[in-house]
Image (cartoon, rainbow, N blue to C red; front, side, top):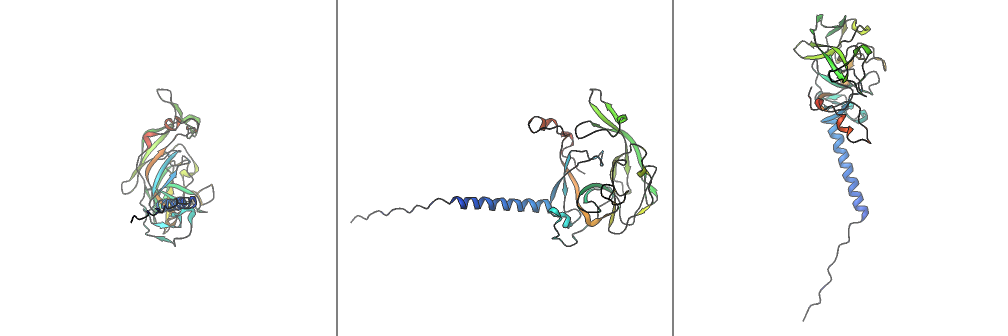
Length: 275
């Protein structure tokens, strides 16, 4: 007796709603991974000013290590208060370039160099940095030269110059400072300004004295913590991360409708540098 073949059950295709739900779940997982990475590993920051010339130029994009000084609410997006106090905290060293939430409102990311640690006496005299009563060595070196671009303009006309090939540039007096412990870095000193002379400031416990490398164009710890006028002494609790790797840099000359300018505007020689 011949058996009658039975029809094979065919599974219906997944409903469009199920596919859409899977895609939404994927996006949520991806967003969670990005949030965790940016909060606890590396986070990108861009440089919108020239207060850290010559080390950082307007249009630089860098990665900051988030674990270097511990974690706090400021490690999280929008400073969500999910982390009580500061965990795994450590103190930066003099001379390190750090990102922090700027007083008094603690809502804007600033980047400066750590100059004074708790207990240090910090003072400027005639444009010379003094730490604990001792002058920090400051040596004149070759001028800092940066091409003029949409992201870079000379502070004053007398700093404008041209290279041999006719490229317009800004040329600034440059110096090398060497802090106690041997860390060296370059600073600009473009003239006589009120911030060239300050009172002695003793850095309190748990605080940091920050300065920009562009000494005559930086609203830093030499000024009281007033929005748009200075940041005062910065609490270590405000630290966000440590500048680590230069990820990208542009002179501001790129246009979306002209794809070739995405390459010509890049400052390729600045990409990949470390701090």
